[in-house]
Image 1 (tube, rainbow, N blue to C red):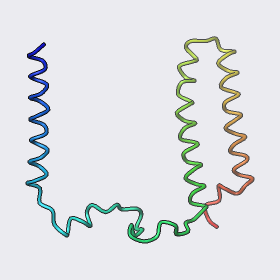
Image 2 (cartoon, helix red, strand yellow):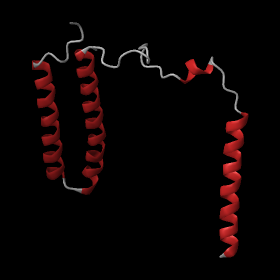
Image 3 (cartoon, one colour):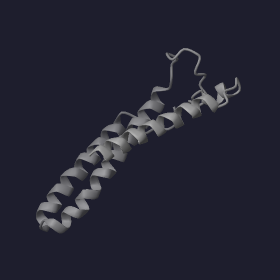
Length: 117
């Protein structure tokens, strides 16, 4: 037990010494400041964060995320086919696909799928 406590203390001490040495020995310069600034699609990170952006671009992003999650939900349905009989699998799959198609129809009616405005 004493050996484990000693080794744990030694590991923590060595890791702290290594982190302290890396902080001391690292070379910081003014030109590194630009490298450390975030790159956000050409936006200036030092300007106001409340600038207007395209709502259409935001809606397309949300649609992409929704369909991405839906694809991830379709994969377990394939494994469900092996575990259940065909009728239960068909009902679940049909219900899920109908929900997807209704969502797609709603987006189409709201003109969210038009790429050119």
